[in-house]
Length: 33
Length: 231
Image 1 (tube, rainbow over the protein chains, first blue to last red):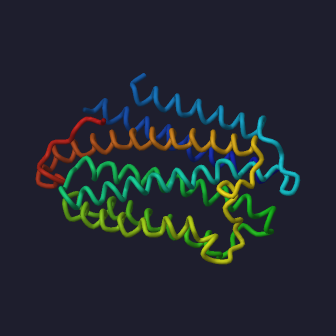
Image 2 (cartoon, chains in turn yellow, brown):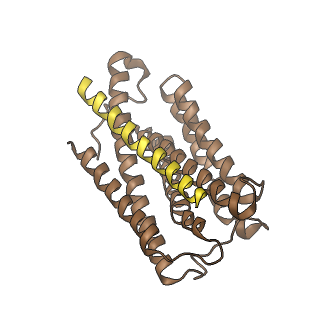
């Protein structure tokens, strides 16, 4: 069970973090444009 | 909320529904126990990564043919998103392997070829990051992206070409019960939607970055064409 939780926690952090970082980068670039 | 944020919110919502199916709908596995549920996102992420690297392949071929900046931007976007999904695949696989095999890693054909795939496209991103923006970097990266794709069928068929510790194909062999198969196919569809949305967002970012370079250093433009809006 520990490994299942760790695996999905990692996926959530990486994919969620990437989505957040992408949207923040995009917003920042569009604001500067 | 712009259209990219709306698309990202929809993709995240779909992934939450997929998580619901994985943890609430799919039946447990009598042999492996709870860790079997890692399979749904692990395999879906691997297939999403194949799709992303196919975008790099097609983008690279088109760029080498007509130096289209649109194709080059799609290739850059596909490589980054593909590396993210390959990382998910590798780490989730390692966390499945520990309780099942007793170790996080073994140098079998599937695991090694997947690690090589990650290194190839991480190298592609490194070339794009370190080289001066321009035709030369784009051409070198296109060649890396095209030849790097050779590893995708090697990864996919490694479990049938060689004797590996990694489980063989179970979806195409009808080895999954109906509920598990439905959960897998739904998770796969949601993951592919997420990958497509992430590529579209990254494409837009690359377009804006190209426009920034074009303003600051016009000579370093990948081509003479002006950056275009995202499709």
